[in-house]
Length: 121
Ligand code: FAD
Image (tube, rainbow, N blue to C red; front, side, top):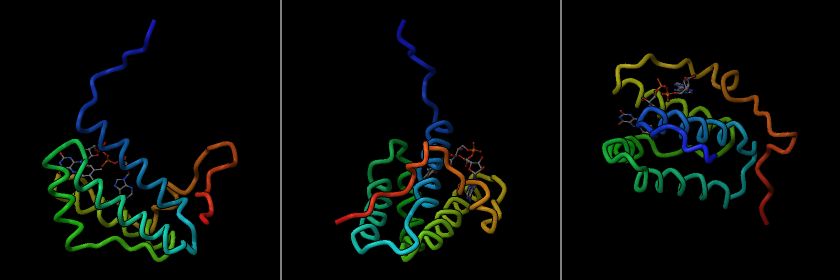
């Protein structure tokens, strides 16, 4: 029997997306290439255009205008991601997350030892 799962909610989509974004940031190279930096910026811009919750996407677009992505290193991207997630948290009345603990929350990733982002040519 096919597992049809549950209807996706805005909350579930949000949690999954944040999981993806924080995990990607935690795995982002210490010294990213120019291409990787461009890709990370483009990904955020694409999310702000295609995220399938219109109010969320519009809000995120505004957040990006005042807080453009910082992609100079994995540390910078993880810190920036935490800050923009906190802006969304605040707008929803959720508690602020302490960004000095972002690596404790998202740094460990179990993917059979092949977690890091591939070097690019
Ligand atoms: P989430 O906010 O989904 O967080 C998941 C987990 O991340 C938490 O349990 C915590 O362990 C960790 N965490 C929390 N804050 C941080 C942080 N700052 N840094 C690192 N880790 C953290 N919903 C709306 O209703 N309106 C919106 O406008 C909206 N905009 C969104 C924009 C984007 C780009 C995304 C990805 C989601 C948006 N959402 C929006 C969804 C919303 O942010 C939550 O995902 C959803 O409400 C579920 O919240 P949650 O309390 O389960 O935890």
